[in-house]
Length: 83
Image (cartoon, rainbow, N blue to C red; front, side):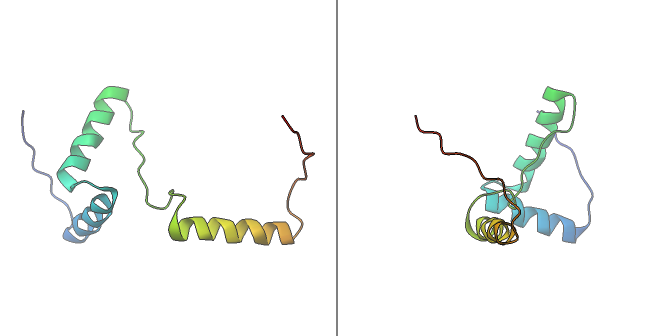
């Protein structure tokens, strides 16, 4: 195993730390995950986001948006198909 030193803005580090801790791990683990993903996929496809969760406030925002769209008539009606 080897170690690296990364220089970054303290504010960015603090904000990133809060996000990854909310996801359940620490910043060094997130950085290792990022590097492992790059090495494995030969690309940078890693995407973790608190905004993409379908719970809490994010779910409520999506629900309210869908209801508003339906009230404006922006929906597609489908026939009921029973199995």
